[in-house]
Length: 152
Image 1 (cartoon, rainbow, N blue to C red):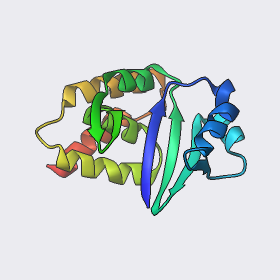
Image 2: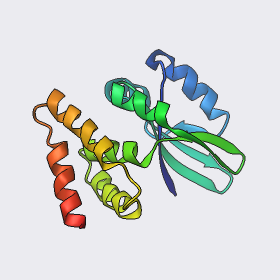
Image 3: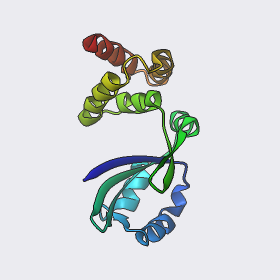
């Protein structure tokens, strides 16, 4: 089963309308209280079941400058008949390290290994410094530097 994160710029007041339309295409809420979760966390967990395709999808509703920037910097790509905008490896790294989920940290290691020599470290560090400046408890910059040293 695929596990997909989708960042969108979206009006939370239209969650019911979105879910109703999504159902026509095989998407449905993963949890019974998906509207409440989306309003509280900005994440709308949904699933896709269409033919032999199943996927767990987290719709992440952009709520801050980092998320808006990642979406706007994304590049359009075509996969089969689908055209979508994919965020850069740098923005994905920032999102993963800013998350407190252990799975995201493991994903982060894989991204850094696969993208070694192709990724803009200065761009990432600039954002992580900004995050740490706004959130005094955050240690994303330090964690990132430690991870880079570990992977060397």
